[in-house]
Length: 191
Image 1 (cartoon, rainbow, N blue to C red):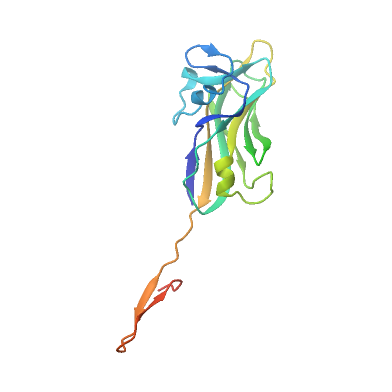
Image 2 (image 1 turned 45 degrees about the vertical axis):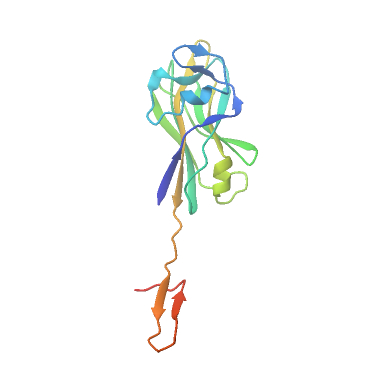
């Protein structure tokens, strides 16, 4: 088994959350993704957030480098609330033109990582393909926060769990008789 981690690389089809990069800003497709693309969460240094509303963002990811059979796709986010007990944060994906949500949780006042796993592509109901991963958008939603309450997300990424393709060994054999050639056996396994 192998895992490829992909982080936001540009804004996706939906940008509704506000962002903070030292000061607060209105939603911006050119900047929201930069607040959640860190390898290590930077907590309150940069994040996307929502106040008193239900909104979400989607982000493009780079093309995957993996190959083989995809076992599942798991989207992570690291979020918190300004006050515990209200509101929800969750993961979102867009595949084959449709959007799907999952991994909904009620955040606490400390940043915590949460995730949602899709074992199959929810649009087609079958195993994920690498072309679908290349076109996948990942994101988060922040909803139901009351007056004066905020939901914050500081990191979003996806892990693609897969079984690498196994190369078939190639073997050669030498016919000891004079004038005979070397034989190539592309699928013969020894021992």
